[in-house]
Image (tube, rainbow over the protein chains, first blue to last red):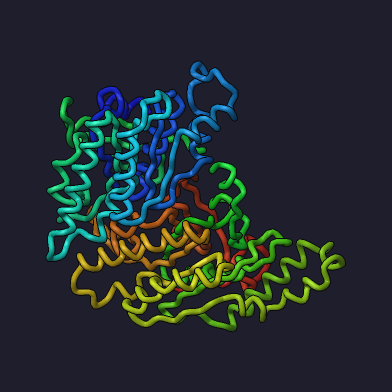
Length: 229
Length: 270
């Protein structure tokens, strides 16, 4: 999506952890699907998609691929679809321990795999990390928060060591008056880049705002639109 | 994976227009939340789905059983019987040629067998609700033909008397993740019926679904039912692969059908 790429300074950067936060149905899952489809379609590498709400939909990926500009298409549609689907690995995780397990396995496989250009994972998407962390955060003991920090550290280490881009989604909670991103203050420091998106009621136009960026100024807005299938 | 999704069947809601905005019906392997004001037909839709999931495969259905978890006590057996009869008469209408072929299959299309295919749980407190969901995993392992789990309504016991809001959020998120896992691993549809509450935003009172923002992320799809004048409408609010859309529908004596059908309608009481 061109406007989000501009906000991010060229796209999802390798070695960095990017977070997208927003109200329900503001388009976070769509951004994840778009990124997965584009990365897989342009031969950049494999994508590991960790889904917590069963929202990964192959037919939606097919629709997104159909929207790609014609100049990039050099192969027949169904072959491209097959290739893209085989480069996207989708796993469902439903609790935090399963997440740790998957990340461990990923680390092991990245450590010992011989680097083979198009099969190496270059993008890791977790949609959404906040629903995995929500059952353990809060309350009296701080174990939940420590797990959240360790998830953040593992993700950043994976990103840095194996040159992956990591994209996570977060949701919003009601603060005192205005909604604010979930997961609290300690999480705020974890991602390198944070984007917030919101959708105008009743339309498909979404607005993205940078909340935090290591290289560019914050507070920039961009409007974009998801074309309906 | 793509071919698997394309071959997946949907559970018809009984109304052609509703099926249209849902992309064919309620999807299996996904959690769908349906919310609306009281009296709009959520329980009716829940009962309709519990019946429709049992439509035999020959007639385009899934031929599966249903689990109905009732927290409010709104499951009326007489109404279920009525809807089952309505469903069977519609099947007979649409598939007249099958009468000659499978006369043995026809014997199964009795309202009683539809009633027998619904496993009913009545729960009276939130601890029971949590216990049932934990028990469901074992139950589903034994009864592999269940294709839909309907919880009506998921929020009822969590709204009153819950002192610790953070605990409530944690418990609810854990519950929703468990339901997601169940729907994915046993290939069934999970339908959660939810109530509405008023929220004070931007200087006016707005109706939003109960349990707040953190709960709104725990479902895959969301459908909101509302009144438009004298007509019932459904609005698809959240879906990973479908655009937002809204359509009218009606609740008749036979169950949920398209709006504008000639059967008698229940007019808005409030």
